[in-house]
Image (spheres, rainbow over the protein chains, first blue to last red):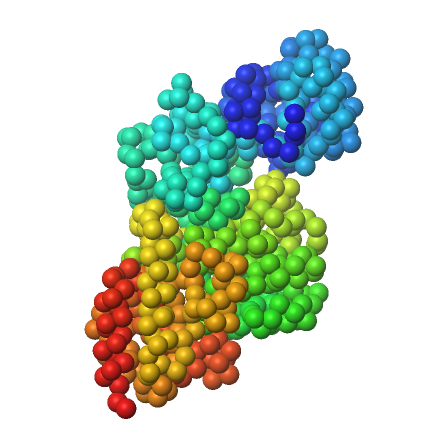
Length: 177
Length: 429
């Protein structure tokens, strides 16, 4: 598939079917983008395993940090790559040694490695590049519009509410409403 | 759900607005509240740290205003928008995010008189300088840019001269110097022209005018095109440097292609405070729903009135881009082919006194200082909106003493024409 754009349905399916995320390059620094994404995805009910060799054994937001993907003791649905485009190939190759294989390789905004994408897709793994799962979740749920951001979503259906006053789930599917 | 791209009229009604989840209200409610309850302390901390989307206080975000913002962002084809109390405050927040003392803006000289005042005088006290380029000559922008230039500022359709600016040519100059292009699109609205498609990086509006369209509410907006790379230079530290206001967060790195709108919100609106009232956001949203219908009627009426004036023996000249033969007609056909807008000027024979007389004689057209109302409006700029400018600046802005400015409304064109006909007939000589 071309990776210049993704349909909303494809991204929604990825975020809907993912339960566990291994975040490679997760930072303990509270103003780094990876920390933001980790915190947000936890708040949406995903289990997130931070991967960072320098922080292995410590905790970020209450989650044990692992030194490598292979150290994570549970099956990983999505590998979220907070590394540069060049490093994304090695991370992808490492992910492809996991058993069971992850279902999705996700590379963050500005990260794109077409060789890695080709290898992963040949193994049946879905690939998203140059996107942020927090932004995509915020867009598909409508939350991102609260900050004046163009979600590019139109809907005459009820938003999908989660706990609290300001907490939405993925909306837009008739079955959700 | 398919990924079909909706048309302009559909976006004008639906973008940003879903039914209210707690009541089912289909029209966006007026959330007339200052503040919002936190779910718990962790939620509060996430909101204050910009780690979660959500509302804290109406000076920063508000759910009614957010719908307005997303609506305008969608209509302009931008990544995000920020609504403000007025068009002037949208300009203030835009330049606040770009400028430090000693920096300058290169601006087209065919700007709204209020913007000329803001740039020439108010911004000077911040140490922000302005250099005036000839809006009709893109090369004149190139010649004025120096290493302290942080923005180019133009109007897509200039008020009141009716100048259609060559956005693409000026955008090329902006790109060459790696400077963002800021375009005020108030007079054209995105129905007629979408500046981001022609190379603008930031689009501004006074929503008070055609966007709201009913002359009942003040408001402004800035739209982030998502096109400028704020990390490509050292010149925009609010976007590219760690911010002490947020524990060292780098906004461009964190918010990507909508970071400019975020910076204007969390550093500008938060600290300078020109927030729009939720009531005004509601009124403006209601207006925007009919923007495509209204704007076409505004243009059609203006075309008829301009053609009438062009044939009148007491009228020296008519400056309307919709008229074949007008110096702006070719650019109008390129940038806003659906119409030349509804604001234009004409010269009445007899100069200053005759201009005052026409304005005074009108019975249906209202003598007031606004544009973009359902009602037709008339003003004599030399004695009102442009009075504080020097004669030279008035000339440069297209507001010499014989100039009468019209903002053509949505009445029957025949009635607007009849009113102008009797007003002109009553002039002595």
